[in-house]
Image (cartoon, rainbow over all chains, first blue to last red; front, side):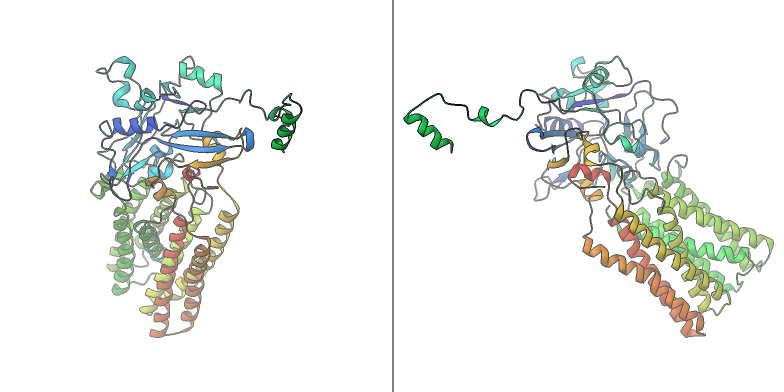
Length: 244
Length: 316
């Protein structure tokens, strides 16, 4: 059923991504691909994988952006995946009921057995999160690793999405964003976590933590960059010549 | 957006087919529909044929055409599903009307009622088709007040041009009414398209690279490195762009082919009698449909998607 759940989901499971600590190593994207090509939405098909023009399905892609100018400018690594929105247009446009938002935890999923591959859901997502599997003829997307997070055969520490478990910088956090007391909700409140494209009204569950303010690297003044050497005579002359 | 041929043929073909069926239905409702067997068979055959060909073409866009029947289930939330339901329902009054006309019921109350229903369902189906695009918030060129009137006007213009050609070929007096109505629809289409292009050229969607990344507080945001060196589905599907130079040429082709030439053809044809008039009317209808194909190609090719903000596009 592609109508949204009548009542808001009891839990709002999602990710909090820290753009301050992300180092852009792509480990989350690689581990996502590795887990999910054998998981719920398997396979994440690659076309021409060893040829000249390899292309394939990924649920998580890491972009790099520059923001600001000069010394206040930043290079920010930016992992992008499904935000499991509260108002997912990708779900309501689905003509077959293959796309749905789970009433119990708000996770947005695709049923590959009823998807007709019309691709309309991918047009409805402003975040570019859904990727069509040309080989299987159905749409695929991040499952928030539903086959890990509730998997009792895994040790409890591993019951988090693959991207979260693998992040070496601890830039990815998983939890219930519907519970204001959860660790992820407190992190969002503390760090001023933001929604992406809030003006479009999708009300994403996933939040992004903006980079922290820079400290101790204000623009140095000229005397600081070229301090008086405290020497005199010949060496003072050399210093003056070389400083020219 | 990627201008997939199957979707362009679907929207133009079904739009013209529903336009023709709506024209026949309106004429029946007004008691002006000819009851000659050949005219009825040709008119409804062409209308239902175009609609059916369009709907079949749309299934070529699907990864799993054999599951297309599932698209009738989600009419509560999905305009695509509503379109599918309305498209199939519209066969009922249209075939009913054709049967009543063939049985000699032209001018009767039943033909009038079925005619009104045929026109109503045809218009509703075209509105549903347009709403599939109108409801997509990430695509500014579609999510605006121009989309639904655009589909209705071009459907009406191509459908009326076909109806006019048909009646002219059979020497029916209804050729005059449909010809005049086609001229009005073509003029409306010309003005609408110009206003639409002015609108998309002068406005952008609300999302920016800053809001897409949440980094606006730092300053202007620009893409540094893409996630992968190769292209991907999102870039192919949403990142299709047509060069400004080519778009200008195609816009002129759509205006002249879609509206100006067919309007002149119909206007001239209205003053001619016999096979000459019919030939001009058919040429006008064919050029109108060809122009509508160019217009629909541009409707897709010129539309920018918000997701491309992540891939370095300046605005969406």
